[in-house]
Image (cartoon, rainbow, N blue to C red; front, side, top):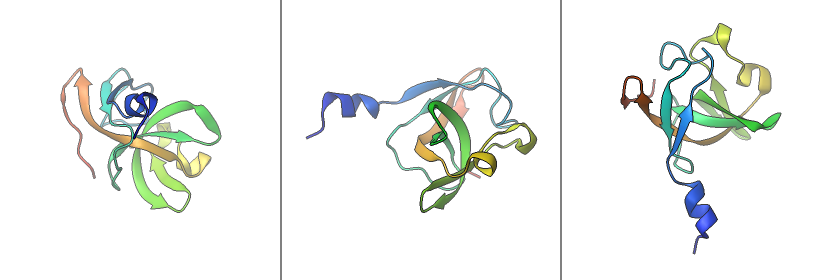
Length: 109
């Protein structure tokens, strides 16, 4: 049986996007909905964390599953610090919806 803490950790989570690394898919100030604990598929936008930056969450595209995590990249490579610099990321869950300012479903590439 799961603890209350485990159940709460899997609740959908609103995330504020900061920076331009995901342009044109997402922009600075967009609010998205992440699903921690749900399976991430290649090409999906995901909420990720890097071992080198354990206190920082990022929204990136899960490009390729690796043995030790995901190769996660921004859609705007010149504006993104991602797996090309930081190595594999831990994918915490997919980001499937933009809530604001233009609500809608996000699709995998």
